[in-house]
Image (cartoon, rainbow, N blue to C red; front, side):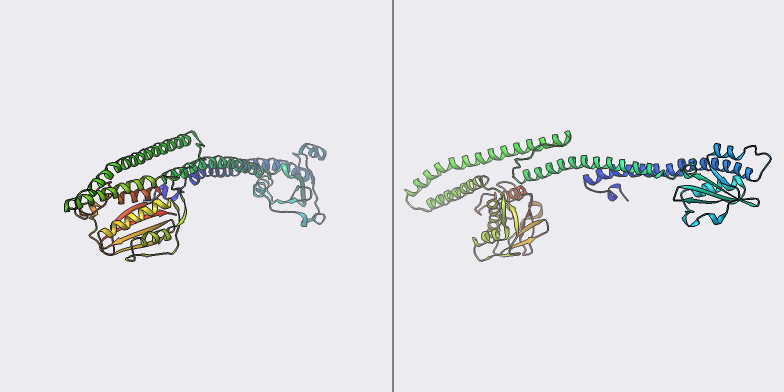
Length: 431
């Protein structure tokens, strides 16, 4: 089924231009058709009838009919035309005449109907005088009359002026639409930057009232999200910092006790807790001071993989330029690789440089995650019993923080089946 949106432009600017230009073109076309087909044709027909009546008087005078009471002088004065009853074709420069002009057929029909004889019409371009020649008995009559009395041949000037004024109005509409669309594009660009955690200090609401209201709503949303993130980061950093003091005291107390299996287990638990706090603090510090910049994503991934040893291989382009927070992205890649090597013996990283985004695929040959549980894996502190054992160390924040980082940059993180038989984590970052 054909829908209107399938044959109309998709963009707001193109649709707005279509709504402005299409009615103007349609109205101008209909008006021109009516103007020429009805009004001008009727005017020329009336003018042709008038000239035909005057020409019939000249014909009657030249034939010396008894019903003609007008003399030569009266005809010249009242009809405002000159004529010759015995025209000599040799005295007329036919090469300077133009025999074809607009609506000449209307005049010929009226003359032949009124006079009853074929009439030859010719326009002299030297003086814009119209010559009418027709036989009248043994004579050849030639009438010379001004062209403007016969035909409305300059009517196209009206359409030209209408077109010029229409173009002027369309240009005004284009300027107005361009201003409104630019306001929407600026709002879209600012919203995209806000979504990626970037600030746009020079952004100001502009355009129509509705666009300004939408811009204010986006700014208010950005401020609220920023405040929420700052509060969450401050709380997480504060809790992690406050817990370090009792952990340190417990470590000192255990260090002074006799070495037993229970003491070793307690020390291991304290080490795990310290590692978790370190990850929390690293996350809290990473949200601050890491400004977006252009960097080589391929180099960053290879550096991150090198920290896990030679058994983590990287395949793909040697250079992929992206813009984002370098430390946050490196931490996300590290979390994905670390999560993979905990549950697998073979881990591979594949880089793909697409036209609009770069993809980082981290594959492993581990047990994987069931399809119906993959969204649950992104929940904070979520541990999946079937695929991930509770005895495996970790905070349960790796996938959560990696997806948050990807979405903060305008991308995403998805889980799928790996070609190696385990889990594939695909991190997408736009260029």
